[in-house]
Length: 234
Image 1 (cartoon, rainbow, N blue to C red):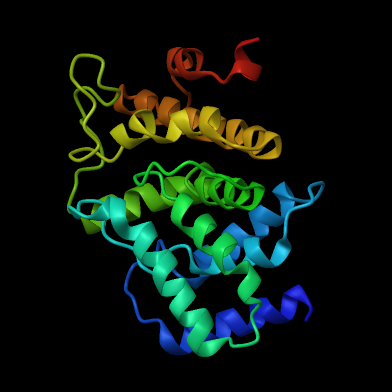
Image 2: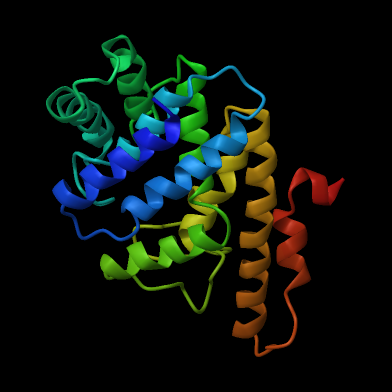
């Protein structure tokens, strides 16, 4: 069966059977992760059906970031994925069950599960890339707003004189997690895309800091120099 047909079937199932309110982890998110995964695995020998399936079901169980069992969500998602495949996609190859489950389980940042397969590495990289760039920026503030967190500390936005705390300030999440993602990418293609998008976030931080100082026309060059990617600083 063509890979595009599997994608259509997965989306149809999700639209009719999956009810959830988190618009940062919806079907559109799955579709974007899949598009990114295709870019990453273009020159690899990865199994496209495994990657597609994991991309579309990796957040089928998604617990809020402040949930005490957040680290277990990907394991629960892997179990639910296999249940769905068994109940609703009987023609899906059972020989791929383990590979799909591992890719779903290992994608999570909080679960800290090592990726044992190329497919798992691709899915994790594609999902993490969604956290960077313009979409990543929007998702940070969307999720923080839903949790009732302030956007930033106006007096010390970059936490120069305090501890970073992304459970309190949305902007702290950039330094606490997002700007560290490029170094954690599992594939070379994922790493290149990650650095490119991280630079966008740095420039946003520099613009925000300039505006907090009353400069609405420029950016804070010191911020850019402080957080420049290896390519920029070389």
